[in-house]
Length: 114
Length: 117
Image: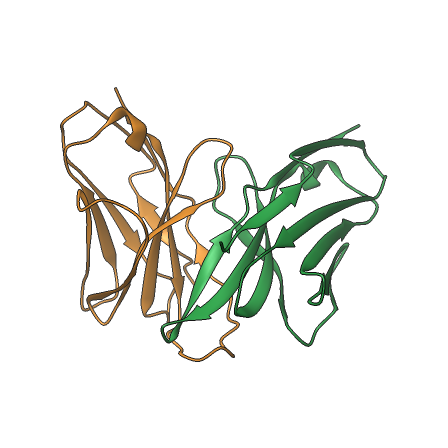
C-alpha cells in the first residue's frame, strides 16, 4: 500500500534550537518527494522538491535529505524562529497511469517557544 | 502576480444542503486540483481538472463533483452535505505535464473552511 508516515506527530522546541522531522514512505514507483509548510488556517507552501537522484536540498534554514534506498527523508530546521511554528507535510509523488499522484503524510506540528 | 485564490473563506451549511466552492488558479497555470483536509490530518485528494475535464479522481463519493471553466478557474460542488464533510477545502494549481520528470510544485490557496451543522 502506498503510504507516507511522518514522525513525530508534534514537537515543541525553544527558539534558536535545531530540529529534525522524519518521513518514511512505501510509495512506488517513486517520482519525487516534497516538503510543505502549512501555517494554521493557510494553504501549504512548498519548501523543497527532490527527485530520486538528489539526496539533499536546502531552502534557507530548511535542509531536506532523501535516502531513496531506505525510503526515508528528513527535514532539518536550523536556528528555529517563532515563525517556524507550523505543520510540516511530507508528500511523495508516484507515477501511475501517465500522471503524478501525490500522497500526503499527516504532518508534524511544530511549536517554537520563546 | 496573483496566487491561487479561493472563495468564500468560511462557510456554514446544514446537513443535506448543497455547497459550491470556487478557485482561481495562479496566473499561467492550467490544472486545478481539489483537496479535503480534516483537522490535524494531511490533505486528501478529491479530483483534478485539466482542459475542462476531470483527469484524476481520489476516493470520494459522487456527491463531490467539479467543473473547470475555459479561463481555468474551477468549482467544487458537494451535494447532500454530511457532518463529516466539515473540513478545510484546498485548491491547488499547476502547469500540466506528463511523465515522471514533472517536478513543478503545487501552489495552494488558503482554502475554504466548511462547517456542516
